[in-house]
Figure 1 (cartoon, one colour):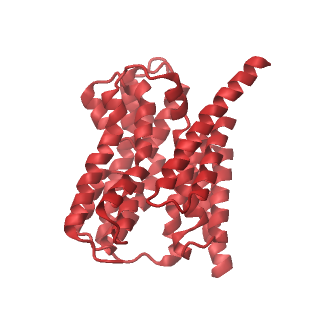
Figure 2 (cartoon, rainbow over the protein chains, first blue to last red):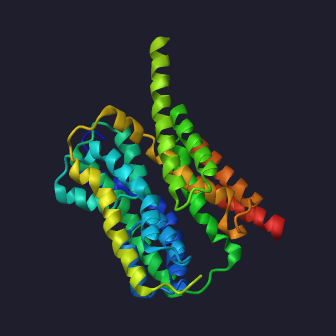
Figure 3 (cartoon, rainbow over the protein chains, first blue to last red):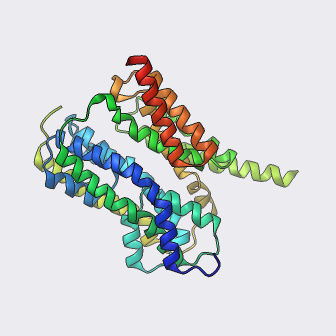
Length: 238
Length: 111
């Protein structure tokens, strides 16, 4: 793809992002249904989805709001769940940091699991990509996902009725997240990071306010980074 | 379960909107193309594979749908999703395999 224009990278991003419609539709619908069941109006539900645009954090906040949790703790927990997007933002920075500020601001809003995962894979595979090509690809990945997420939320809110429990929609989130993370386990260091974070989060199950998630995430990152250094050294020693 | 107070709800929505954008903007917007130290980048390589499993593991082991007690269909569905995702490197195949496993086991064990 040596002569690719930003436009063709936008199309490539669109293609890579399109399968995630299958994730966005059930989650968006589920959020719309659960929010309506919790007593949110259509305007409240849609404002929530448009302004926050972070599924896992929205579900967390909705759950805690219904459990008479102090407002500060609802906010802290939801943002803790969303802390990973700050780390996404940081790891995208070496690739997109040279773009104009307004583009970076729009990209920031659209930094979600799917756009991040697609983009990092592509940017690592094709290090010769220019910054406009990378931006075009990034926006391509969210173009099919974001409208579907909004529309599905709207449909779920309009539906409002209870989805039968036999559909086991509670487990859509874990399956989608596992499906997203498993292909990222490319090296032994990635495996170690994931393993450590799972062990720590399960041991930290009693830690309140979702702090176990943050502790486990940091532990996993440190384990992965350390393992990388150890493996590198071993390679040099051979 | 209680009726959510509208004022509380709007505080949470606005707080999350501002907070989520700030989290996403902090590095890409403010750091820009200034070089970041190697140790930071090395840690950031493991962000996704550390945070996503940590988010998911409690939901798999203690699912809310069963009141927090471990549940064989959900555990196996999670395992199948992970194995297929790792082997095929394909998100959609992994999701389909996991969902099929979940529905098949729920049907067989509880149907």
